[in-house]
Figure 1: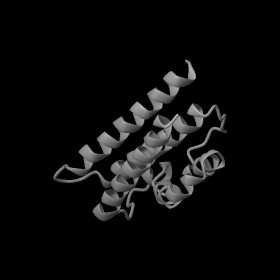
Figure 2: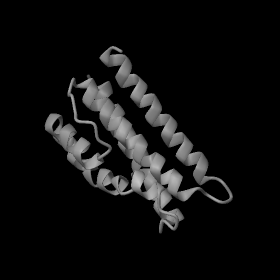
Figure 3: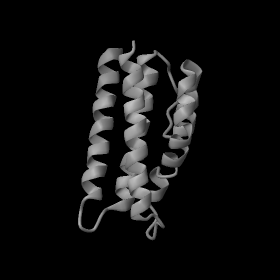
Figure 4: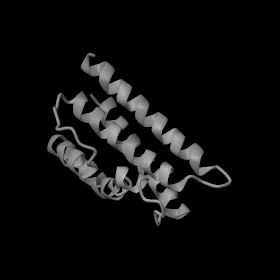
Length: 129
C-alpha cells in the first residue's frame, strides 16, 4: 500500500476508534475501560500515520510515549501533546485485562478529550505538507 494511502487509512481508523469510544461513553452504563482503550488506540494510529506520512519507519509498539518522541524528532511542536500521550498510554492493553479496573467516568471523559486533541493536532500537521 502506498504511503499516502496507508497514512489516510490510519487516520480513518483513528477516527473510527474515537467515534466508538464516544458511543461507548454515551451508554446509560458507560463502558469506561473499553472507551479509554479505544482513545489510546486512536492516538496510537494518529501518531503512526504522522510517522508514515514522514517516511519514518518505527519499531512495532503500542507505546505512545515512544511514538510521540519519534514525532518530536520531526516536529518539535509534538512536545505540546507529550503529556496527552503519557496519560493515554496508561489505557493500553493492560487495562483491558483487569477485572476491577479503577477507571471512572471522569477518566473516560478526559481520555476522549485528549484523544480528540491528539487526532486534531496530527491532522493539522499532515495537512500542512
